[in-house]
Image 1: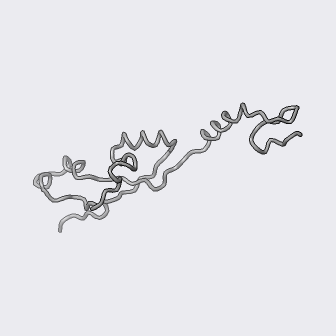
Image 2 (image 1 turned 90 degrees about the vertical axis):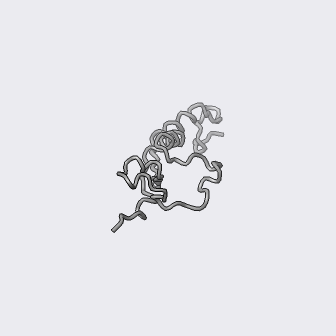
Image 3 (image 1 turned 45 degrees about the horizontal axis):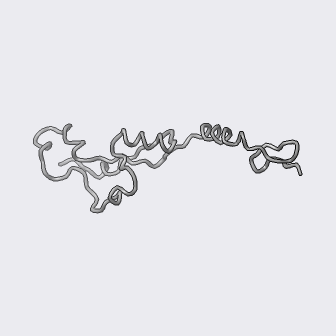
Length: 114
């Protein structure tokens, strides 16, 4: 019984489906579709900011950025934090994410002193 190929395979003369090109087609589609991460968050940490500050602010003990009081990554069980650019780019490559739009996470809550 011939088929119209709706299930993804190419029909042969005897009605069987040939799936030899299916993986190629999947790869073509995957390469054609570009994934956009539209909710990536830039995470700022005191140790990343400190070298750019003038004295006496560089050596202050108080945190520059308000911090969370819980472990966002559940002890590392949720994967990488993405705080380092290299880690974020590597994770994007693994997940085939073409572009990420970054938003500040904590920085906007910081204000300058009067």
